[in-house]
Image 1 (cartoon, rainbow, N blue to C red):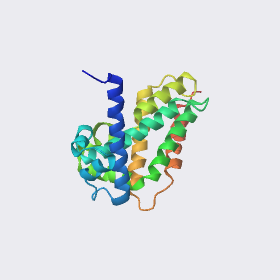
Image 2: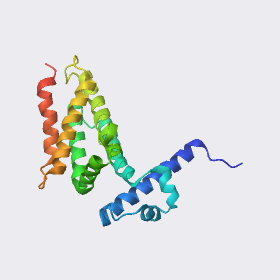
Image 3: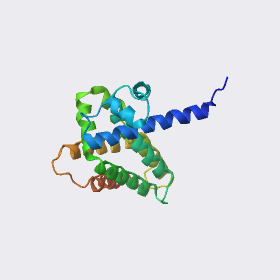
Image 4: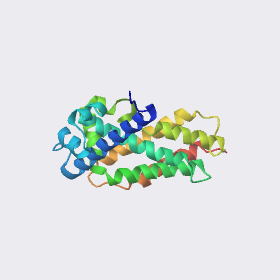
Length: 199
């Protein structure tokens, strides 16, 4: 028997999932979500239609994955550092999130609009858009560095920041003329820091 090692199989699965995701997002941008079929996504990705369903149970699931993928990528970059200030890294993370969303505003709006109509799309981690795991780690790092009061619960702080961030994101999706999301999100961090900074 000529079986692939588990690591290679897993890498192949991730590669196929990303190909399907990239094909779907490209098609959503080119022709709109409603006009894109699973058949077209599979063809663009170079896989059989059935393969799509091995990775995404529905077309909506691709939208859910979009938020999780982007937050995961930016979170990893923020946790890797780039600054001696953990709070600075937190603000950079929020600004990078905003920049990515501003580039794909129509798709982000669609995700939140569909999330209201398809309850499973937004449950749990806000449709993949929750930043809480990353912000919790960055807040812990800031507490360790003495930038944030160590007596405060980092998970509660991350939850509060996540709620404010998601509120701004929903508002930004609803307004006709979008405001500068990066400015608003980094402003939320500054506002919170006035109350939780180490003294």
